[in-house]
Length: 283
Length: 118
Image 1 (spheres, rainbow over the protein chains, first blue to last red):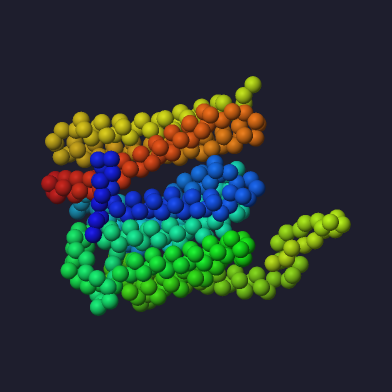
Image 2: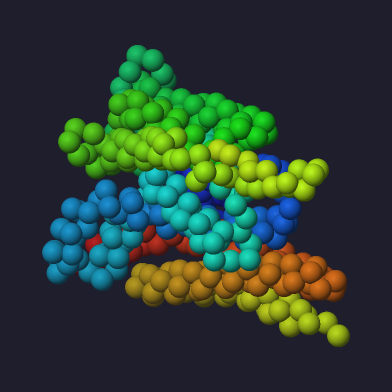
């Protein structure tokens, strides 16, 4: 495990390094995907990337805090037992210090919505670009998780033994299923699928829905192979499994609703043919 | 007469500030003595300065990018805007590195002071 590395003389978490590389690679791939769209320039891409990252960070920490809601409430109830700095350290360093992927996903999506609808830098093509780039970023994020040792797999004969985990020392010396690496591989396959669909122009403006169909299923199954207990558990399912169900249902409802809409409402765009007649492009 | 020059200069200024502020924070950390409480106070100040640098850097990126787009649309030069954008990006990344590096130290220091005071 290598939870911390040194960069320019400063010690930084390995996950942060991998996340930064993931953001850079995803942004470059995203720009490559949509640069030929009219109106999308490098400036739009830079601002959208920066603001989306801000949304991802905030969203990830907020949902992590939600999974620790009972601990945070207990902390506030027992404020008198802590010093001021000790209280801050536990609140921000422990109960709000981690991130949940789904929180980051939704936070980033909300930021992108704000950029696309309330700024000069947004473009509708960015939603499909976001759908393709999320799993690519997630590949790097999960590899960062593996190096950081903050989350880990169940004890298993399949897998390997890790050492040097200072975040969770109790897992050292035990053979575990490499759930982070398996999820990284699954995300890579999802990225390839969405990339090909984007390049072929399939499911235009609906690639996010495709992602919400595929990734929640993968995540729901892989959650059973995770051994870390830091996430919240409701009704026998983890918080991420419940969010997976909700996202899958959302994608299902969206698709069914779109299919049931009358044809004249499902017109996507109109253009003129060579005779000057208006031709509607339908869903 | 250039109309976007002021916007480009604003972006450059915000970017420059975001680049300078983290250096102030590292100077504070070096100037702090061995007193544990003073070190924790300095860490809190550094975190606040880094957050300010991050915010200003992001504002610089937005302003510089907007100024570049406006300059392109107006057919004006965008050299200052480009420099401002690069400086803002570098400042934001640098502030983020310092922030996350200090965060690792802060958690350890706060816990130590908390235990010592109690």
